[in-house]
Length: 71
Image (cartoon, rainbow, N blue to C red; front, side, top):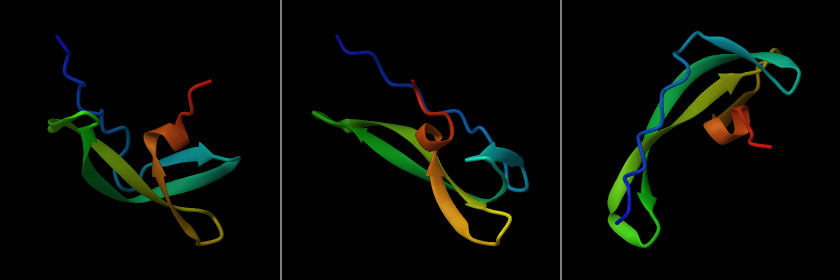
């Protein structure tokens, strides 16, 4: 029996700041999306992309794996 993968916790809100690659970035937008299990197409979980702005004004879209990489 397979267990359900829980929905990803939303870690930030628009306007929040955090350090990324040595720079303080600002969360501009959060984009929710559904991730479907491989081999189980009817099962899915909620995840988020975070659109952040760097100090130089450029934007980047990050997933939680980009922000908190596993060692």
